[in-house]
Image 1 (cartoon, helix red, strand yellow):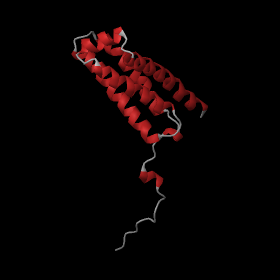
Image 2 (cartoon, rainbow, N blue to C red; image 1 turned 90 degrees about the vertical axis):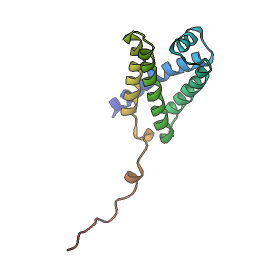
Image 3 (tube, rainbow, N blue to C red; image 1 turned 45 degrees about the horizontal axis):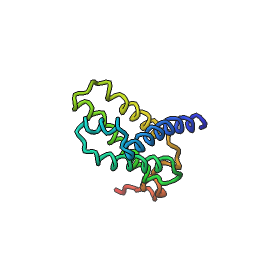
Image 4 (cartoon, rainbow, N blue to C red; image 1 turned 45 degrees about the vertical axis):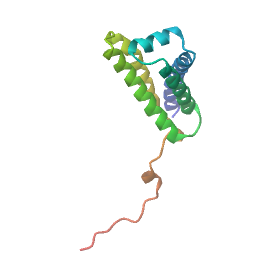
Length: 138
């Protein structure tokens, strides 16, 4: 069980650090990020939206509880990172530029896979106690 705990927190911490740096860089409109967004064809105001969303998502992933919000954060980050990789490829950038989002996506998926039960959304069907078995009659 201890290995599963470490297998969750290491990729989660690395991912959270990367997304925090990216979110802060976007919110403060750092020159390299402005150049990157402009190169990909995105408006500069989009940096504010994504930067805020990244910081909110990191907060959600690191906060205790909130399993439903965590699922949305994982989904949002997955869409963001897949879109980033595809945007670089569509802009004609070398395939290596799509590597960073793909690596971050790998960290995110590892975090999702190894998340503890307290951070997992339980389906309503699984939460209900089993009813009486259905018996077929002839």
